[in-house]
Length: 235
Image 1 (cartoon, rainbow, N blue to C red):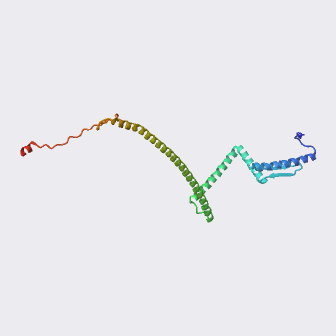
Image 2 (image 1 turned 180 degrees about the vertical axis):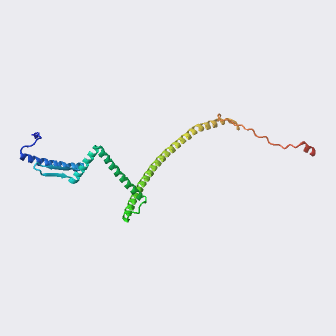
Image 3 (image 1 turned 90 degrees about the vertical axis):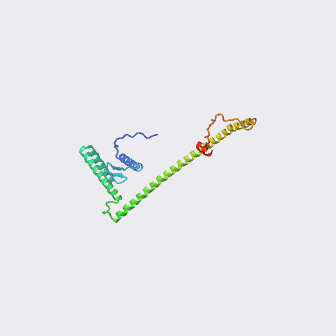
């Protein structure tokens, strides 16, 4: 049989009340530990018994949990108050300006500026950071170049395959044209040979009737005619 439903109210018997407190306290502490481990939460638990005895649990430290709680509560109250909200955002703006100033200083140092106030150790650390950054940039550049080369090789292989396919198609078309040429002009040559065998020598029938005939007049030859005066002299 299942357990009956327990009525949530104060237990009058002090012995039963103490036993129940001990059991429920152990279960509550167990759940708090599981919540902190499973959910990566910062948990703080404080329990006072009816006799005034303190029982607590914190996965980090109770002091840090209480300080974080007070800070969060204070910020929450500040956001509810308009004047406090203005002060809160002013502090946030000041913090962001400070972060920006630090980043600008670091950038100038990486550019080789404003190095007069740095010690040898600071300069060595800066040099190591720049070497590491340069190594990362070079590795990234080499990776990009390798990817581009692989992509170009892949495109080149595809173009080469397409050229080979086109070359095969051209050769096939050329062979088909040669076969057609042999069939057409080979039959014409055979018919022309049979017809010309019955004709006298020097006569023939032109097979290419559709080919136009081009005629060209030859230039008259120049002849030397003597002038009448020279003929009279010779006579």
